[in-house]
Length: 296
Image 1 (spheres, rainbow, N blue to C red):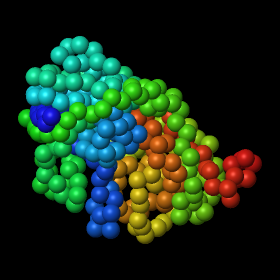
Image 2 (image 1 turned 90 degrees about the vertical axis):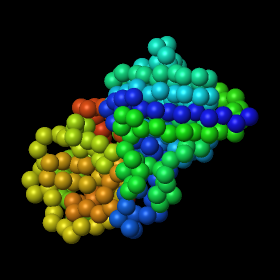
Image 3 (image 1 turned 180 degrees about the horizontal axis):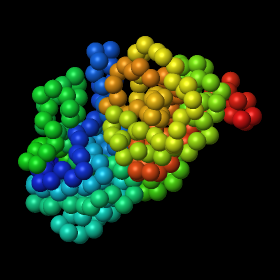
C-alpha cells in the first residue's frame, strides 16, 4: 500500500544537508564529489529500510535540530548519538520507526560522534542536478527553517534485524590506513616521520570540505613549492599550518603536497565522526614503505 510522509524543518540544528551517492563522475567539470561524510552510517540507515545504499538521506552535523513529520511512513536513524526523541519519547537508533499522523523529531547536541543520518523509506520529491539531490548544487535550496520534502513509498520495508550500534561508533583514537600520496617522496624523512608518528587533533575549523588537523609546529621546510594538482576525498594535503584530510565537499584541485591518501573508505567515514580535539593518526600500509615505519 502506498504511503506519503512529509518532513519539515523547524530548526536545522548545527547544520543539515541532503545527501545521496553524490556525483563523483562530474569531478572533471570542477564539481565536488559530494556524498555522505560517513558512508557507513548512511548505508546502515538505508539498509534498515531496504533502500539503495546511496538513496537520499538527511545528514545532521553536531546538533539534531527539530523536524516535523506528517503522514505515514517508516524512518531510521543512525550515526552520532544526538539523544533523538519522537514526541518527547527517547527512541532507539539503528531500528525502524513507524510514523502515522504528526510527530515531532527532536534531539540535542551530539553526545558521541559528529554526524547523524535520517533515512525515510520512499522517493524524495526534490529537484535533481547532475543526478544528485544534494544540498549545495545550483537550484537546490539549502536545508533551513521552513524547508520541506515529500516522500512517497510503495509498501513497507520487510523486517530487518536491528544493527549492532557499536559497530558504527568511532574509536577513541582513529588510526587511518594510508598509502603514499604523489608528493610523499618529496617530503624530508623528518616530515614523513612526523606525519606517521604524530597523534593529530581535529581542529574546530573543520567541515565537509575537510578536517584540519593540528599538532603544534611543522618540521622546518615542510612544504615544497608545487603547482595545483587533482585531489580526491581521502587525500591528506600538507598545508603550512598542518595536514588537511579532504572530505566529500573537497575541491577538485589543490596546491599543497598530497602527502597521503586514506586507503579505506570505512576508515575515512570514521574520521568524519571524530569530535573536536579528538585524535586521528595515520598508518602507512603500502608494502614498499613498511621498513620506513618500523625503523623510525
